[in-house]
Image (cartoon, rainbow, N blue to C red):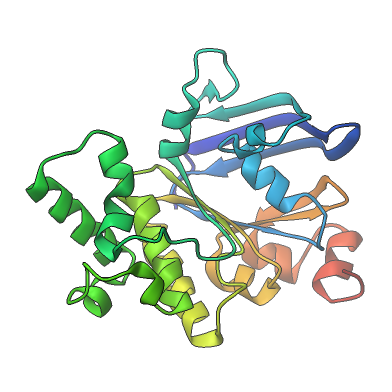
Length: 253
């Protein structure tokens, strides 16, 4: 375990128009760990996740107060290149969203956007990303077939490979297994265990068992506030606050 801080979030407020969706969030996220965000629907988990790579900038009428520091630099500083930020902080969404292109071109997409033209470099990067996403062996004979022919679980791992291809530091995952069957879900969970050796992973999940299985640290959100954060095993077995205990034991939510 490392204690190098990747993200430091301080007094973060977030508004959709007049609605305050996040209230004074403060959390530090350590490098090369998996941090799970849990809490009932509508509590602000996904909104918070999208703050970390400024995806919420794309929604009209939103406003942010407070600080989000990535490697010590404020991601809202005027000089920050948002495209570069999103390359550094990759994202995998709830539903697999492969492009209507070949498997190869899906993974190569970000590389091409970033100006990589050398065929050998592209091929090596695509193969490595597919291997890192535990997908290469399943698709190596059909790299030039449509990605839309893959199963849901394979499509989600392809989206992870696509995110990994541009060499991010952080991988944000917004309920990456909620649309998948149990076997595909287990493959994604196994993959998270492997990836957190190299990447900082922040995962939103409704599934508390999943949070317990994959994460090192868990943060419990409720009504736009961060209620409690801690080492996952401690938070699930000996939470400090009754509100956390009530949620974990199923008394509400």
